[in-house]
Image 1 (cartoon, rainbow, N blue to C red):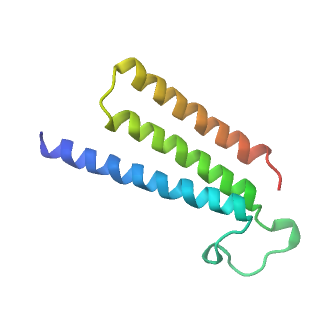
Image 2: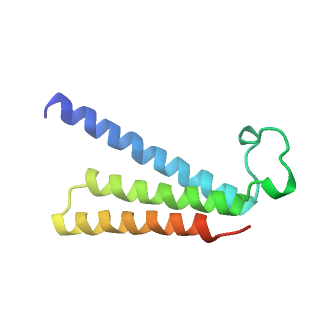
Length: 105
C-alpha cells in the first residue's frame, strides 16, 4: 500500500467519523428544537430567528449523504453496489437541499 493510499484512507475515515458526529448533532438539534449556545450570536429579530428543525434536519441529511459516500469507498463491495450507494448518497443530499428549502419551522 502506497503512502498516498494510506493518507486517502485516513481522510475517508475522518470524514466518516465527522459524518456520524454531524448526524448525531443534527438529530439532537431537530429533536430538542434548540441550537447550541455557541451557534448563537446576540439575539436576532423575531423574523430572522433560526429554525432549529429545519437546520437540524438539513445537517443530519447532508451528513448522512456524506457517510454513505464514504462507506461506499471504504468497504470492499461489488462495483454495482458501490455505484448504487453513491447514487443513494446523491439522492439523500438532494433531499437535504429540498428539506432546507421547503421546510419552515
